[in-house]
Structures are given as C-alpha cells and as structure tokens.
Length: 95
Image (cartoon, rainbow, N blue to C red; front, top):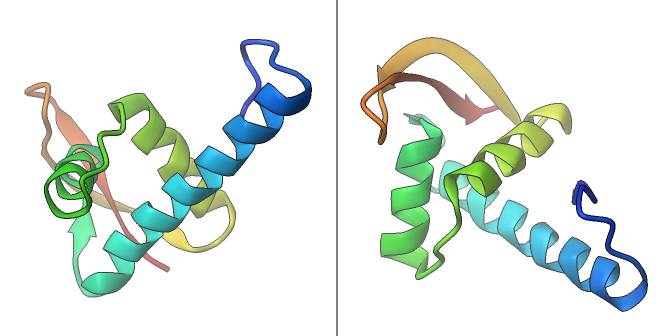
C-alpha cells in the first residue's frame, strides 16, 4: 500500500504504488524464508540490502511491515531487541 503524502497523481501515483507492492513482496519473502524467526525493521533492512540488493529506507521498511501486519500476514511480538539506532525495537514474525 502506498500512502500518498506527497500529492502524486496519474502515472506518478500508479508507479509509486507498483513499486511499493514489490517492496512488500520482498519483505514478506524474508519472513517466509525462515518462518520460525522474528525480525526488527532494522534487521529486515539489512537482509533486504545484503541478500536481495534492495536498499530501502527504514521508514519504508516500517511502512511495509505495518501494511503486512494490517493484512494479517505478520504479527508484532512483545520481544524487543537493539536496533540500528541504538534503541530497542519490537520484533515481527510471520502470522
């Protein structure tokens, strides 16, 4: 899902939505590869970069995780781990 916060329209909006769908697919694939594991958004960002050659901003990773959680594909756990900015972050796992 693409949240049109910048006022895109027509072809630009359509392309942004298509690109986001692909990102959600990559992130879901990471969770499906090891379904017994849970991940922080920072871990997903590193895996996407190192294993898929995809460099997504952390804000986009979080948006995608939120979208996949809303769709019932992921669930937020109570587990907290250190994340990329030195703060604790929640983990998500496959639903």
